[in-house]
Length: 386
Image (cartoon, rainbow, N blue to C red):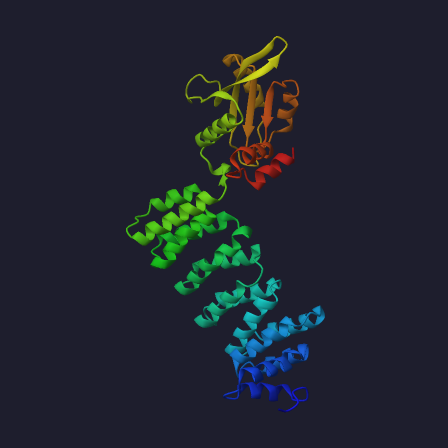
């Protein structure tokens, strides 16, 4: 056999293309190519159009062995140049895949691929699909995820289906509100069956309990639809529930259960509309006093507020009145947000009232419900600001 170290890369590729070349010789030829590193990679790019599958494999093996960052960057630039529409389709496809596999941190390339995926007027369906599939290989960022979500409006069902398959990878970086509306539209606007089923399942990943309620308003005639709803419910139950999405009455029930787990006795919700003085929950606890242990009444007010809606001093003043009216020794105000400075100032002279903000509530929920409920990052940040 010819000394492979002196053969040109073109000669080595031609030898690999010969019919009947055995496995041993293949390994020798591949090794002779990949060990040439950067030089081989740059030259192989010119052979893609001749034999895309063979050259793609050679490029993958060659890139694995290149560790020098400046050299890798030069190769990446060469690959980026060849994904543009002025190059042949096989060349573009191979370079897209190589970029996603070997340069996943180059998310600007992923954004460019999504431009191709969205270009129904200038790109073929196959090229759009290849661009989408290559994009998933890049690191999932909020920017890529948001652009991916916009493709759910595409007129081509195959594009929409591919986006739905890709969305779970972007769940950690996407705001649920940016996705849920699109998914609901796919469920209700006469989408193809598989798209509808997948959208229902994904609502369990991105939505909350209200997503389940909205889906159940749709007619579910087929067994596959009911199975999709079951998968959706499984996703909903497996992730922390958003306390801010609970109805106020349900939030009061959650507080009642929390107090019971904390050891309070005789915990009861109060019926709205009665003379409860704004009290949502009452409970009993035992305090050690000078004359010994004494069972005392505690009244609780629940404020399931958005992060920007801070509890004011008027709520704390009202609690003072509620304590007198209820004959209670202690009061607790629990909120998912935080307290205004005036409320904290008023509280300094009324230490028998306990103020629990969103951050403190989250700590208690984590302790007694093992991560089942989340107050939400925004609520926690608002609490820290006070």
